[in-house]
Image (cartoon, rainbow, N blue to C red):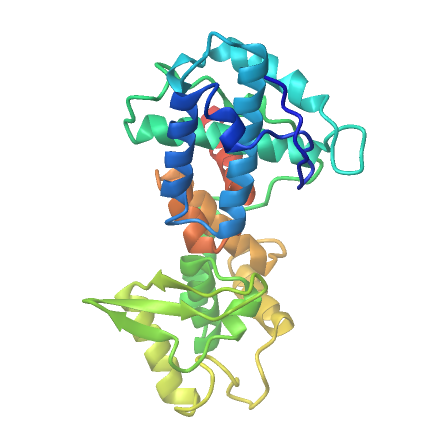
Length: 316
C-alpha cells in the first residue's frame, strides 16, 4: 500500500488505522489493543505519540514487507530497514525528520516491543527486535545523579544538621524526586491517607497536572515534627521558614549545599536529587512506567534517558 496521508508532530505521510486494517488486520489489532492499554496509565499526549509511531512502522511494513502480517512476524531485519526509511521521511515543514523526532519514534516503538514481551502477549516477536543502540544520540547530556555513596553522605549530613528544615528539604527531595517548584508549592493538606498508607499530593505544576506519591512513614513523622514546631496550621506544608520568609529555589539550593559541604561534596543542583532517585529506582528494577508516573513525566522520552544511565552502571 502507499502511505500517502497527511501527518503532524514532525511526521508526514502517515496512513490511518482504517487504511491499514484491510492490509495487516492482525498487526492493527495488536497495536490498537496496546494503545488502549497504555491509555489507562499515560497522558493523552503520550498515547497520541505512540499512535503516530506505531502507524508509521505499520505503514512501512505494509509498504515494504508484505510477508509481515502480524507483530509476531517482525524480526531484526525489519527494524534495520525501517531506521533509514524513517530518517529519510519528510518532517513538518522540513525536508527530513529531526533527530529528536527520530529518537522519539524509535524509542516509542522500542517500548512497544519491550512491553508486549514483558506482558507475555502471544503476538510478541520471539525476540525483542530492537535494542537501546537503535536510538540516535541526542545533543543534550544525560542527567547527572549522585551515586549511592554520595547520596548516603548527603543524607547523613542533612540528618545531623541543627536546622530541621535542612533535613526535611534533603530527605523530601531525595526520597520523592519532586521538582523544586513542586516542593515549595506543597499545600498544608498535601499529606493524605489513602487506604492504610500515607501519600503526598503534588499540586498542579508546569505540566498542568497533579499526582500522588507514596510516602515513607518516617518522612511523614519528619514533616509533622517540622510543622508542629515552625508552621501555622493553615500555611503551606513547609513554608514559610522560621524567619517568616517564603521558601524559594535559591533557599532550597543553599540548604542542600549546606548539607553537601558538610559531607565533603561539590556543589549540588536540586534537580540532581530528582535524577538520583530516578537512577536508583531503575538500577533497582523499577519499571519505566512506574518511574514516569512517580516523576510526572509527560512522555517516556525523559524516562528512557535513565535507562541509558542504568546501562552505563552495568558496564562500569
